[in-house]
Image 1 (cartoon, rainbow, N blue to C red):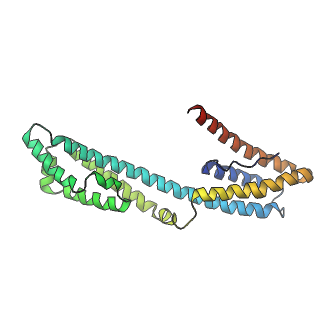
Image 2 (image 1 turned 180 degrees about the horizontal axis):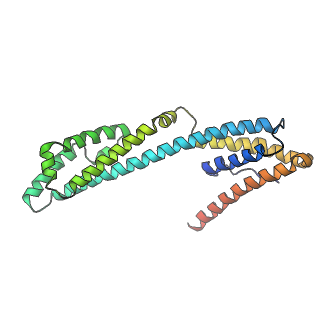
Image 3 (image 1 turned 180 degrees about the vertical axis):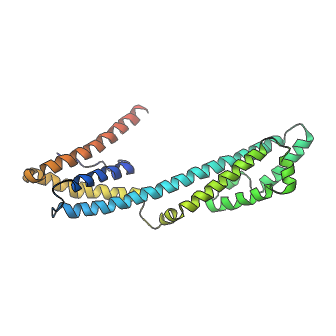
Amino acid sequence: MIEKIIVNSRTTEIHGTTRLLINAFVQSTLTADRTLMPMFTAITEQNNALGDAIDRSKAQSILADKDDIRDAADRAVGYLIKGYTYYPDETIRNAALLVEAVFDKYGFSVIDESYVTESSHLVSMLGDLAAPNVQAAIALLPGVAENVATLQAAQTGFEDTQTQYAEELAEEDSQLNASTLKKQVAALINNDLVVFLRSAQRFQAETYGAFTATIAKLIADNNDAVRKRWSKDDSED
């Protein structure tokens, strides 16, 4: 018997398997079927929305990665400067204390702020670090200029990414998220398509048998992959 798709499959698994189901329908001899056609119209619409939500989730993930990079760069600047405040040479130590005073106006805490606030503070800090007297002090501290340049590049990279995905990110709050849409797609497959095909295969095998076998195989392939992953995860505990 055709099994239902595992709802706890990954979002991308549901999306990918559903695309295969849709392709199977399009390539079948049942595209004009009065029962299947509206089912697959609904499934296609929901799966397209799921694909859009996955793309928006990717945008969030990419932006988060860019934020991690600038957070690490901010720490690198701060830790190196603070290390030099313990340097035995007085000239280097005093230079480090001057630069540290600038850094401490913003500090490590900026990495815990919102994206917008963190950007504002980092831009301000980088501006302060570019002041002539601070630049003169930085020149005495090996590696600090390079770390500051890395932070500047990371901040620019973050802002460029945020601009690139601005539209997708803005839509995130106004549209259903990928997790919710995944459940809706799975429900259409399980509660409508699978239930219908189980009955159709039993009473009209000559019409629906081959198509049902194809759909069953695609769903079984998805579910087998999910179960194998679960089994692997359990064995690694």
